[in-house]
Image 1 (cartoon, helix red, strand yellow):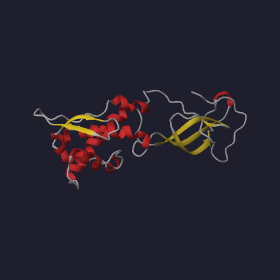
Image 2 (cartoon, rainbow, N blue to C red; image 1 turned 90 degrees about the vertical axis):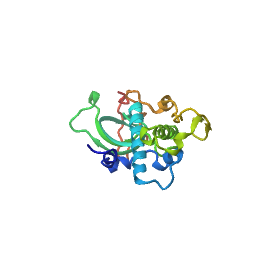
Image 3 (tube, one colour; image 1 turned 30 degrees about the vertical axis):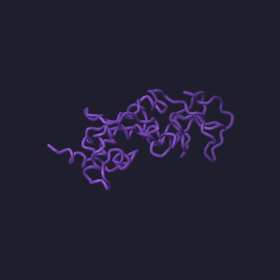
Image 4 (tube, rainbow, N blue to C red; image 1 turned 45 degrees about the vertical axis):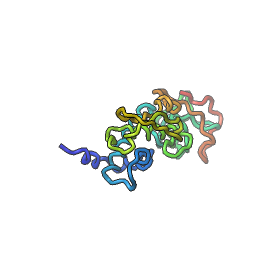
Length: 214
């Protein structure tokens, strides 16, 4: 049977490169000395990945922008109506040749980049706070030096932490309520994205009624 470290070694490098928060940012909060030994780094990265999986499942969306290709999209002077939001950029638009549009109006296959950026967007800082705090709670990091101090309170923005002394068993810093991330949650619905402005260069379609609202 493979050991825990062997299982962590088998993780795809591509996945590790997609971490939203760094191993160092979690290690600092847990009191691990720097630089991180490889074995400790792998455990921290595994804890972050588990936290990301949990948050992605709750939000119902990726934590980083994704490129989508959507067919049957209506075009008009005001732009496109696309399924995923927020739209970052439209990469290309090609007229559909096999699927007629509703009411005979032409439709297009649009490739575009959309989604949230939980890694670097200042507005998504609460997501990073939740990920760091949840990773700190992971059983893989139970030996962390900082886990022997009881946390009495932590601010929502993560800027201050208050510790207390106690003879009781140490408590783990609890992350903010998962509901604090609901601002970015899709809740299983199809999201309406207002038309992207402007339309791609070279594409001008006049006189098409309606917006193609689903």
